[in-house]
Length: 163
Figure 1 (tube, helix red, strand yellow):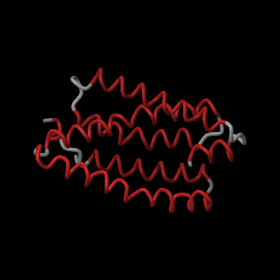
Figure 2 (figure 1 turned 30 degrees about the vertical axis):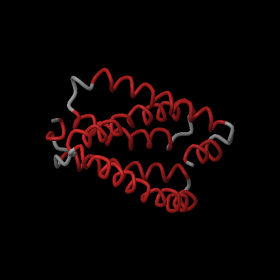
Figure 3 (figure 1 turned 90 degrees about the horizontal axis):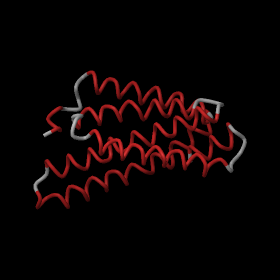
Figure 4 (figure 1 turned 135 degrees about the horizontal axis):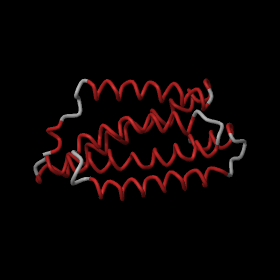
């Protein structure tokens, strides 16, 4: 949805969506490979904190620019940061939850993730139509970044997750 809005409304070329998705996928691939390399040297809670900060920064970069190259760099950064959170959170669940309860916990985890999707599918398009994609990216990125920094400063991502 975001890429369609940016391609159409910012760059006036809806055909850029696939190109932009490719840069996001490239970032995701690079992030997965980079994660594999650094996981033994970087504590897991630091990887989650990194993702918490990189996601809103990438939103600010790719969404609030009129320069295609800058927007593509933002998409690579977004793709790069997602494995840090996705892989870490699933690894933490596997390490912290008893084997007999793991299926139930994963099911609940994915159910909660699916329940939140309508917020993004219904609420965010209304905000984008109201503000425009660039203002939405700016406001959303700043709000998200503020929450991320507060979580990190107040040590809400515990080093106990590393064990």
